[in-house]
Length: 370
Image (tube, rainbow, N blue to C red; front, side):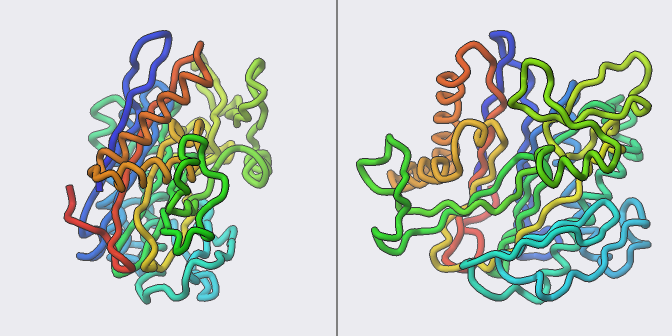
């Protein structure tokens, strides 16, 4: 597994890179690899992203080992999660737990294989609980280190997309607008995608790109949830193409600037919590098959300017030409950087981050942690 990142620009100059990348081996189980990409936002978003990156593995491990004992959780003991029905735990099924730990949505997957390991419910519960409770710790500044550094989550936060790989299975958890794509080898030419990017028409793509994450923007069902919680959902004047959720007036301290948040779920962002923003992740479980080749985790600096299929195709080409995983991640980032320049020549670009995890056929992670 490797990662590459490019700092964004603003006003013609570089700005602090608010993206972060984390990897940990042996999380919750000796055979599990955790890989994550975080995308901070707000004035101190880079600090929040690194704070969550540094603590999420230990919170997942602690929640996994106390999955049946909420009183032993590393943070709030009030968030208990009911057992997820067995019919949800089919390969490719996606479900979401709300802030109270209740099952709120289920989307059945299709064509992704069958069966999940007996430990999968514990993985899912641990990850969901860790996201929610780490966010609670962050928003109440219970972390001594966070308080000592004078980093405030009131108007800063981070999205997150994480994948756990091991025992022949994949779990993807996400809150916000970072994304995960599974590259699946096309078995025959007729199985390859037809709408390849223009620069790849000379040779048909060898992979399908399956999105394994859920986009959390304040639109659709998420907008309904925001409004029910008391938030206001509207675009900023002059940016009608970007829908935002705005904090309630009573939740913003006097003298503090109020601005809209372009994501519906994130760590931090205390001013928006009572407007419906939460860190409850959507979870996708998948049994790895012999054609599953690699996983891409991307911040929205990538997905705002290219599709998952384009990103997977670029990474696959780099790997096919003998490049290392880092070369593949850099190839995706370079294309995203060029796309930002083409599409928004007069505006700055967002931070761009791509992480890649190579898979052994139907088993798990290829190589050792790097």
